[in-house]
Length: 152
Image (cartoon, rainbow, N blue to C red; front, side, top):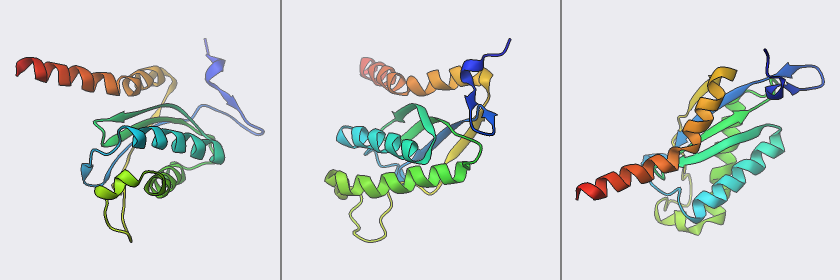
């Protein structure tokens, strides 16, 4: 039995395209916390809305990388989605979060994100598992931190 609730109906197509995207900060700087995290998540949602795709799940991992579950129409390439998300978010974060200047001090040609990224296409069977994995990122870090402090 097919689950039609996962399908998106466009003018000329019916689709269910989902991607698990991950990328990190340059030099793995742990700057994606506090105000930066809040502003970043808001910026990414605005970018998705502007370009016509959705971010169904989003979480920061170890304060230095981000996991997204993105649902997009077939007319949008993954490369463009990542380019929009990384490029616009970096540009806006440097302007809206002055605290980043202590880690990324160059005024010209500074980069927030590492140039690479990971992408995986997600089928309907894996979508819930990946969504849970993304949602649990922060909880796993808390549990690992608690386990380390118990040993001390």
